[in-house]
Image (cartoon, rainbow, N blue to C red; front, side, top):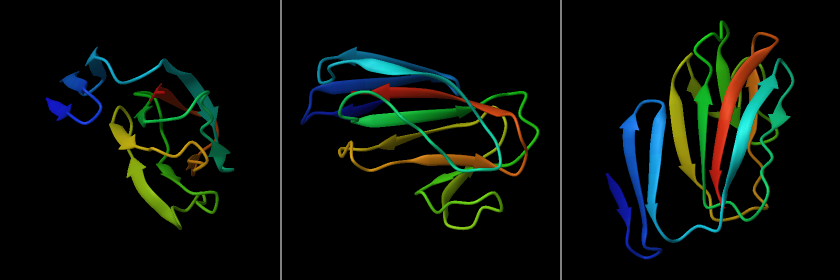
Length: 116
Protein backbone atom coordinates (compact mmCIF):
# COMPACT_ATOMS: atom_id res chain seq x y z
CA UNK A 1 0.00 0.00 0.00
CA UNK A 2 1.27 3.49 -0.78
CA UNK A 3 0.47 6.32 1.60
CA UNK A 4 0.57 10.01 0.71
CA UNK A 5 0.49 11.65 4.14
CA UNK A 6 0.68 15.19 2.75
CA UNK A 7 -2.72 14.84 1.09
CA UNK A 8 -4.05 12.18 3.48
CA UNK A 9 -4.69 9.97 0.46
CA UNK A 10 -4.35 6.21 0.69
CA UNK A 11 -4.23 3.80 -2.22
CA UNK A 12 -4.26 0.04 -2.01
CA UNK A 13 -3.45 -2.16 -4.99
CA UNK A 14 -5.81 -5.14 -4.77
CA UNK A 15 -4.54 -6.82 -7.95
CA UNK A 16 -2.96 -5.81 -11.23
CA UNK A 17 -6.34 -4.52 -12.41
CA UNK A 18 -7.91 -3.19 -9.20
CA UNK A 19 -7.14 -0.08 -7.14
CA UNK A 20 -9.02 0.93 -4.01
CA UNK A 21 -8.92 4.55 -2.83
CA UNK A 22 -9.41 5.02 0.89
CA UNK A 23 -9.46 8.31 2.79
CA UNK A 24 -9.62 11.90 1.65
CA UNK A 25 -7.56 14.04 -0.67
CA UNK A 26 -9.35 13.85 -4.00
CA UNK A 27 -12.42 15.68 -5.24
CA UNK A 28 -13.47 13.04 -7.72
CA UNK A 29 -12.76 10.06 -9.85
CA UNK A 30 -13.33 9.95 -13.57
CA UNK A 31 -12.29 8.12 -16.70
CA UNK A 32 -13.47 5.16 -18.70
CA UNK A 33 -12.55 3.17 -21.80
CA UNK A 34 -10.55 4.81 -24.58
CA UNK A 35 -10.16 3.38 -28.08
CA UNK A 36 -7.11 4.54 -30.02
CA UNK A 37 -4.86 3.49 -32.87
CA UNK A 38 -1.79 4.56 -34.78
CA UNK A 39 -2.24 8.30 -34.21
CA UNK A 40 -1.42 9.70 -30.75
CA UNK A 41 -4.65 10.32 -28.83
CA UNK A 42 -4.83 12.65 -25.83
CA UNK A 43 -5.97 11.07 -22.59
CA UNK A 44 -8.49 13.71 -21.51
CA UNK A 45 -10.01 13.86 -18.03
CA UNK A 46 -12.13 16.45 -16.25
CA UNK A 47 -10.72 18.39 -13.33
CA UNK A 48 -7.25 18.96 -11.93
CA UNK A 49 -5.54 15.60 -12.21
CA UNK A 50 -3.63 14.27 -9.20
CA UNK A 51 -2.94 10.79 -10.57
CA UNK A 52 -3.92 8.82 -13.64
CA UNK A 53 -3.93 5.06 -14.18
CA UNK A 54 -3.86 3.41 -17.59
CA UNK A 55 -4.82 -0.25 -18.01
CA UNK A 56 -4.20 -1.81 -21.43
CA UNK A 57 -7.08 -4.08 -22.44
CA UNK A 58 -6.39 -7.80 -22.16
CA UNK A 59 -7.49 -8.29 -25.79
CA UNK A 60 -5.02 -5.77 -27.27
CA UNK A 61 -2.83 -7.29 -29.96
CA UNK A 62 -0.49 -4.34 -30.56
CA UNK A 63 2.17 -2.50 -28.65
CA UNK A 64 0.91 0.49 -26.64
CA UNK A 65 3.02 3.52 -25.75
CA UNK A 66 2.25 6.64 -23.72
CA UNK A 67 3.99 10.00 -23.57
CA UNK A 68 3.80 13.64 -24.64
CA UNK A 69 2.20 14.81 -27.88
CA UNK A 70 5.24 13.72 -29.91
CA UNK A 71 4.95 10.01 -29.03
CA UNK A 72 4.51 7.97 -32.18
CA UNK A 73 3.38 4.52 -33.25
CA UNK A 74 6.94 3.13 -33.29
CA UNK A 75 7.48 4.07 -29.64
CA UNK A 76 9.70 7.06 -30.42
CA UNK A 77 9.59 9.68 -27.64
CA UNK A 78 7.52 7.40 -25.37
CA UNK A 79 7.65 7.64 -21.59
CA UNK A 80 6.80 3.94 -21.39
CA UNK A 81 5.13 0.93 -22.96
CA UNK A 82 2.23 -1.26 -21.85
CA UNK A 83 1.55 -4.78 -22.98
CA UNK A 84 -1.94 -6.30 -22.90
CA UNK A 85 -3.53 -6.49 -19.44
CA UNK A 86 -0.86 -4.34 -17.77
CA UNK A 87 -1.33 -1.05 -15.95
CA UNK A 88 0.62 1.97 -14.79
CA UNK A 89 -0.25 4.81 -12.41
CA UNK A 90 1.35 8.20 -12.96
CA UNK A 91 1.11 10.96 -10.37
CA UNK A 92 0.32 14.26 -12.11
CA UNK A 93 -0.19 17.48 -10.21
CA UNK A 94 -0.59 19.68 -13.26
CA UNK A 95 -3.79 19.40 -15.30
CA UNK A 96 -2.20 21.39 -18.12
CA UNK A 97 0.25 18.57 -18.84
CA UNK A 98 -1.28 16.45 -21.60
CA UNK A 99 -0.66 12.72 -21.76
CA UNK A 100 -1.07 10.77 -25.02
CA UNK A 101 -1.46 7.11 -25.93
CA UNK A 102 -0.73 5.38 -29.26
CA UNK A 103 -0.27 1.90 -30.72
CA UNK A 104 1.33 0.24 -33.71
CA UNK A 105 -2.07 -1.38 -34.35
CA UNK A 106 -5.53 0.14 -34.97
CA UNK A 107 -8.49 -0.29 -32.62
CA UNK A 108 -6.67 -0.86 -29.34
CA UNK A 109 -8.33 -0.10 -26.01
CA UNK A 110 -7.23 1.21 -22.62
CA UNK A 111 -9.13 1.97 -19.45
CA UNK A 112 -8.40 5.34 -17.87
CA UNK A 113 -8.86 6.06 -14.15
CA UNK A 114 -8.08 9.55 -12.85
CA UNK A 115 -8.09 11.00 -9.36
CA UNK A 116 -9.04 14.67 -9.53
